[in-house]
Length: 281
Ligand SMILES: Nc1ncnc2c1ncn2[C@@H]1O[C@H](COP(=O)(O)OP(=O)(O)O)[C@@H](O)[C@H]1O
Ligand SMILES: [Mg+2]
Image 1: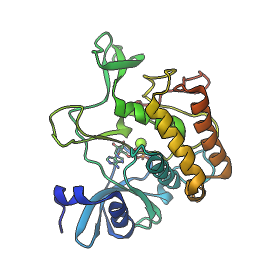
Image 2: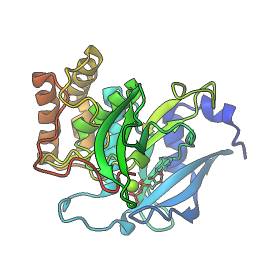
Image 3: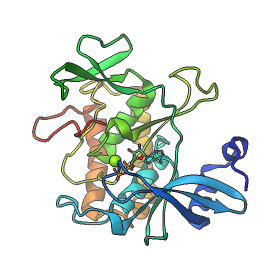
Image 4: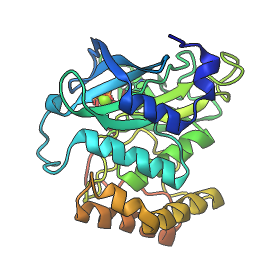
């Protein structure tokens, strides 16, 4: 069994999805911090083994505000939007059968743990290059700030979340993979997001720690991403998404893309819903 990095790097995303879909899935352990039944495991196909997370539909807690579809299906939908729109921020994600029944299976991303892009710091300690999004008191009564890096990759993710209407972008759902110069600095490495099961609602539910660009004009790159997604939706993506989303959710997705393009600004929290997920990590 080859698990060496070189081999993994040579795999295209399609090849990874092939291994995720058709490989033998072994469950290694349950993720203790997860709110649903989520398992760390491994998929193996033709001598290629990859770490993965497997979330069986049977382990999903029912949510009153998401009566239709499944968390697993919306995670697959988020992957499709991320890829077709050009964000490439969601790791390869498929739906497949497993030990606890059908569920989602996503490539596990080993993170660069010493370089968080979202953090909690002492009030007044925000450094240049960081944006403060919330002032709060921690459990011991200390004044703290929720901050995130002023980072283009995070900004791409913030736009992606606005598009999919992500209701749960916690700090722990932001994954920084080691870059080519592994361990060298925060700028290296690729950014991924996980846990997109509570996205695509028809009502605005954007709940995120990435508010640092709220109300700012879209960059040319944002317009490109949004237009690309708009085109993709009309070219087959909508049909593919219809397996996982309701037609009302598809209309709302298209509307969010149009509204973003028309206002040409990053969304702002409007105060009518909790804009920061809790806990924030
Ligand atoms: N693809 C992934 N790669 C690396 N870590 C992941 C991945 N998916 C989830 N995790 C980690 O596992 C934790 C729990 O998974 P999550 O998807 O948030 O499950 P739940 O839906 O139960 O909250 C996440 O907060 C994150 O730290
Ligand atoms: Mg989670």
